[in-house]
Each structure stands twice: as C-alpha cells, then as structure tokens.
Length: 446
Image 1 (cartoon, helix red, strand yellow):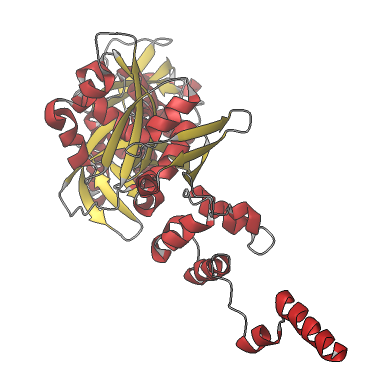
Image 2 (cartoon, rainbow, N blue to C red):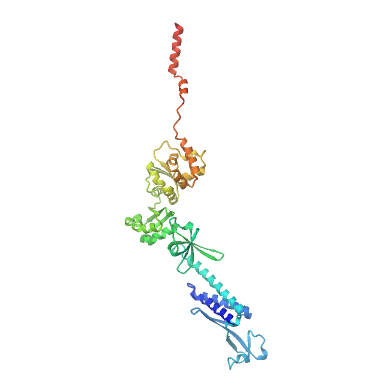
C-alpha cells in the first residue's frame, strides 16, 4: 500500500509539470491531460462515458467522478455502470432507484500498474508538448538574432542553451573562423533552420550566413532598420571580408556614409562581432559596368568590357592595381564576382607580351584554367607574378599543379637560345662569296 501511495504521489508530480510549461494555451493543455485520463479509464472500466474529470491546471491537481445508476439490489447486473440501492444509501440517505449516484474515484483504486501506465502516458505527453513548443517557437524566430549561453563545445559543433533551457546547435561550419567561445560565454547568432528528424526538433544557428550581417546592420544603423536604406545584397567570406550593396530612394542621404558613420562609428561594433571581418559598403546601381567597377574597390579600373548575355566582364587595369583587385587569397575578386553575378577576368593594361591562359588549353587542363581565372588570374604573367602558395590556396589547387602550370607558362617567356659559334663560322656571308668568285676569275685570266 505504501508503494502504491508513492506511485500516486509520483504521478501527481508528473501531472504538475504541465503547469510549468510556458507558451501553451489552456484549452490544449486541459484537452491533452483529459485524453490521457480517459484512455486509462476506458481500459480499466471498459468505458469512460460515465466519468467526469475536473482539471485545475493552475494548481496542478485533478478530480475524477464516476456516475452510476441506482438500481434495486436484486437488479444489479453491471457494477461499472450501476450501483445497488443499499450501497448508495451508505453515502446518500435519501437517494432513490433510478437516480444518478456520483462518487469520487481515487487513484489508489486503479491499481499500481494502471497508475504507472498513466504516469508514463502523461510524461510522454509532456515531452511531446515540449518538442512541439520548441519547434513552434523557433520556427517563428528563423532569420532573427538570438542570444544563448555556451553549454558544451565539441569538435564539429557547439551546444548552447537559451533562457528556457532549450538546447541549440551551432555547427562548426556556421562559426566564424576567429570564434573561440568557452563554456558559459554568451553567443549571438541567427536562427538558420529548424529540423525535425524522428520527432526530435533541432535548432540550427549560424554566424556565417549573410542574413546575420544584415540583421546586425539593422540593429546598429537606424536608416537600415526603418527601410530608408535598403540592403540589396550581401556576400561574405566569414571572418575575412564582406561586400554589401546598398541603395536609397532619398537623395538627401548618402547610403554608404550613413552605414559607415563618422570615422566608422556605426560599423565598428559589427566588425568586432564578426572577428575583424572587413566590410566594404558599396552603392548599388543597375549599370553592370559601374557596379563591377565599384565591386572591385579599392582597385581602380582603366577599361572594362562587359558581356551581359554571358554574364562575363574583362577588366583592364595598371599592373600595380591588379593585386588590389584580386585581394588577399583572392578574396576581393571572389566577392566581386558573387556580388555582381558576373565572371570577372582581370588583365594588365598595355602588356602586349602577355598571353591569355585560354591559349594554353592544349597543355593545361581547362578546369585548372577556370580555377585560376576564378581568382582573377587570366593571363600568364598574372600567374607568374603571383605568390605560388597564395595561388594554390585561393584557387584550391595542389602545390604541384601550380608549379607545373608555372613551368609551362615560364617557357613562353624564356629568351631565344643563341646559336653555336661553329654554326656561325660555317655560314657564309653573301658578299664574301662574291669576292671569292671574283678573285678566282682574275687568276684564271692571268
């Protein structure tokens, strides 16, 4: 009996967990709990139709009443739906045959196994509701910034918990390379996705998504928040560099200046949050040539040829500007291509001795040429002048491949070999030949 009483107390404690749940409407909670009770009642009494269940979610308690028809003692055939008159009058003195007799049913009457089953059912319902609440809550927060505390750091991901104790995941691929968070640190990230595999919702956060940078700008720059300045597009190499195209319909506002602020005051906080990521804010334009020119900033362009149909652009600039256009590890040219949606090839201006990489298609694999052009190296001299290690890293090529390409390109610029002296001596000068023949003729005449 003592063991059974403990089971009852444990079951009630489980029930009381419902009132601790947040953001769940009252009617749903009552309905779920009542369904659990009726399921157990139906198994125990073959029906739940003659039972009333009163639930008080505020206090976390409940009452169960069974309604039975009063019949004469000799007419009792179904004790689960009927009660004998003599039995009923032990509780209600003036009750008569045909009336309803209502009696409270205590949990102890169900038996230990039934109580355990009810407790497990309620616990399962609680877990299911918690999962539904978590999924519903964070689906509404997708593309919004939240703050959470680091709970555990693993090799492939970081586990965080929000203020309600919900677990959130920040994968390594969604972390900025400079991130180095420790347990109990506060982390700001954007809710990227909510997955639900095998009824286990998982909240995916990100600090590398372009939307994270956009939301940070909305928080720091009032004109972006109120829509006066519109962010057209953002492209990022997280922790390294980002380019943001902005525009405004208000001629009185300089969109770039408003975003940067006096001496970069508005953007410093964002740069710190992004671990020193360099931010290039660029005025957007529908003119492809001008947009490409702005996207390649800080490099200055001398000439540009745009093919809008094929989405390609050939850019010519002074040799000293090429390295600026390409940027560290090819970052600037990569982001410019992503921002403009154009394949941009950079050429040195006025270098008639240079050779296009496409002319080496018979000796260099086309995919290697495309990889080199993808980082702005479209000519032989551009490849030879660049640091081999940086070329390999930026174009995602093996060091051996880069060395082979450089060897092929170098041969085109080697000076012509001087011919052997013996060959030069054997070669007759036409004038010397004529003089020799003339001397022979004079001898014969004498």
